[in-house]
Length: 210
Image 1 (cartoon, helix red, strand yellow):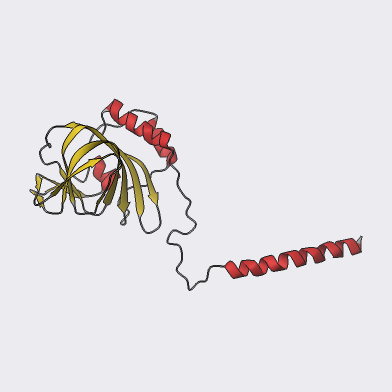
Image 2 (cartoon, one colour):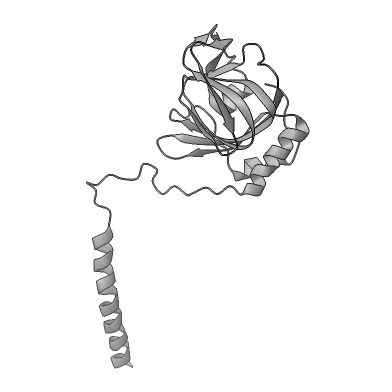
């Protein structure tokens, strides 16, 4: 019995020894750049959940909805779904700009005319109590026009990058436009939102208000 136990112990030592050495070899060197989001999990959002946001927008006449707000270490990433209906001419003071949050649009369906530019005419501060300011895109301004703005005809499949401080202005929408919104929030001014909060939000009518 003793010989058997000794033999098992010897085999374990032989097996574990090389593994331990291998483990030492792949250990992260403290002098190397380290992950900026230490031990952070990944995030998966199924298409079915995103589609529920679009349907909710149509049913409840909503425009912008935040699906997730995720901490990635040095910044937060907001994931939103936006649905805009037909627009023959722009609403007054509908140029939007965000001080700290940059945005990326990926157009899913529809088409629109979008004007971009940093020189905003009649800049007016957005109320700090607005829901979009508090929960989605942080402090910013509205305006009546974009001086020397560039108009783009955007459609399904297109991607638009809007840096913080750049005005963006929908001036015409033929029928509708749906797009996935990614918000880059390096100052972490918006609150986190996880899967459980998303499912709860989808389970009941949205709170009305700006």
